[in-house]
Image 1 (cartoon, rainbow, N blue to C red):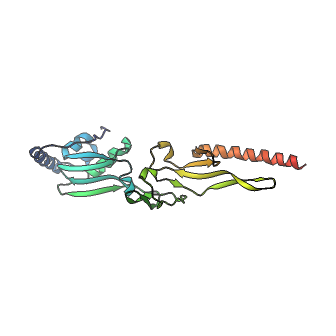
Image 2 (tube, rainbow, N blue to C red):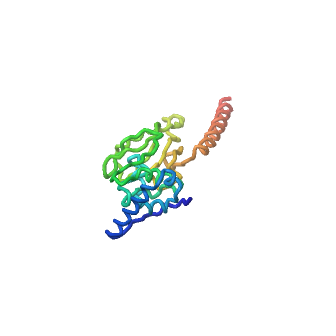
Image 3 (cartoon, helix red, strand yellow):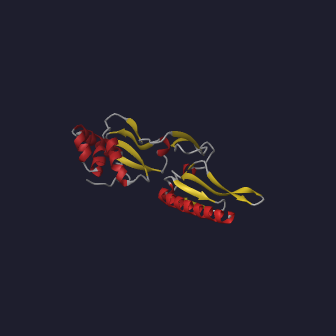
Length: 230
């Protein structure tokens, strides 16, 4: 079974297109669900007269869609996001192809949501995005592009007391995720530590290790305080 889905396939010319549509209709009538599930994708697309069109990352995801189909046997189009992993493409394409018929139709295959949808404002209007339960960021504060939309939690802050002065914030910690950003390493939730001068993004494993070091650091401070108090 081939794993590569071509970027595009489009018959050209009215006569050729009509002939392809007729041949595709004949092939479709003799095709079983088993054939749709086992025929190589390239061959299946060509036989049914379907082309793949890649759209910008986030264009479909903003509406909770992983694949979009429009058309009929002999003249149809499937839209996928350009950055959709190759391993995820084939199952989506096969599912959409299983719905094709001689009748004109449209169908949007929706992603299985694990998080609630919330509105977010971008330059071209309101889109609905999956949002984390810990996210307290106001997504209705307009962003220029979808890639600029991010998730952030409330901060935890360490305040440092000073002799004869008011306490000052020393460290802040929060959760952050750039779900639509261009950096793969920052799309999943990270723990971000900052001291108002610099910030440090950590994976959950790194954050746990850092927390253990902070506990050990706190014990050293405790021991120093006890010695100073004596």
